[in-house]
Length: 457
Ligand code: NAP
Image (cartoon, rainbow, N blue to C red):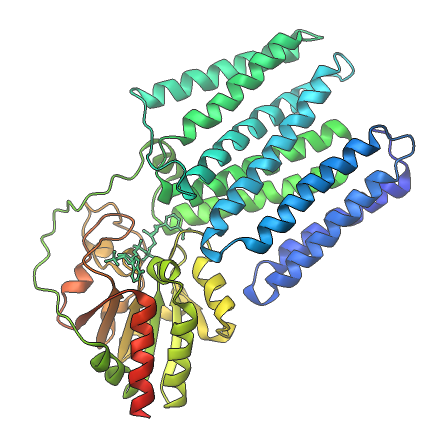
């Protein structure tokens, strides 16, 4: 596309704003500002595009913007914090789909591009189409529309065959200039089906890692299509998203101690099998005793997990922490990198409840402090505090770094019953002598503790 220099300059400035925005998102304190900066970058890039002289289909462009922008505006206002992962999945899928659609239009033009550009268009189409259908499946699973992981017989062989068919068709599109529309159509069908088939067997709880991977794919696809269109904003934005998505995928896989290939091709089977027998019994505690234990402690470390998110208990948890602080107790929040069901899940919820950032600590920062804590309060967390991960080589979570809650003098665990966590592994912490179980939904339980703390003064 022959855009005048002022449009190219504006696109470049937009791309710089994306980079500054991403930098802002590296800390919860500046994340909101980062999102706004990146938003301005996007606005600038869109406005600049409309300044290209002789643009066709202006009405259609504005209609598409109104539908996409309007839909996103309304759904983003309504979305609940716990539904964020599926929203990210569907928006990410739209990005991949848009990149594939750009490729479709460019390939349908026939032999207007050279081999290099056509190759990048095909690559972008393949990756973008996989990301589109894969992200749609991820959305359906997290939204509860698709309840079961569908695993075909010889699933991995089917994946490989489909991938080879898609690559072969893509190669044919590059070589046979100009490619016949039927061939281009078949190539797109193969790529779309590949995304579906690869993602269907993956369990809902693995989806955040998969979404992050598709996010990297979408970035790459957008970067390739940016090259095809000669648009530097798309190239830079695509590369930035691709690199960030790849790093995030690696970090999440590392924090779960599961290689990516394992997540994609050997879905985690919920099982309580373990070669280490857990001895002891779970002991119960009442809300009043839990409140007293914390009220007269010097230091309390709170470990939130998925259950806190499900129960929407973050506001009550912060209210409880404030009451403890007023009573002179030092309170800190310990966050595991994969607590909850998406990266930063706990940070987002605690920030929403108004917990100051300087009270929230990462695993590496806080783990040394559990030994000096009087109480570790585990709220709806399970796998991230399971000491089995340190010792039991046969456990699916072996090697996953955990929060050392068991090293606190007393541990109180709030959960509804004897349910296991996402991994399905029994938690040895719950059976230790220093641990007490406070059974109930996290929100009313935090509420009961608050009432008792208030009566204790
Ligand atoms: P978890 O191991 O899944 O455990 C959550 C616990 O919360 C359950 O044992 C459940 O026990 C309890 N719970 C559920 N609803 C509750 C409620 N309303 N009130 C009180 N408790 C409730 O959670 P986690 O410790 O946060 O660990 C996260 C897991 O997800 C890890 O295994 C991680 O690898 C995986 N994962 C995380 C991500 C990510 O990006 N964060 C991505 C993929 C996978 P009851 O049923 O007995 O109440």
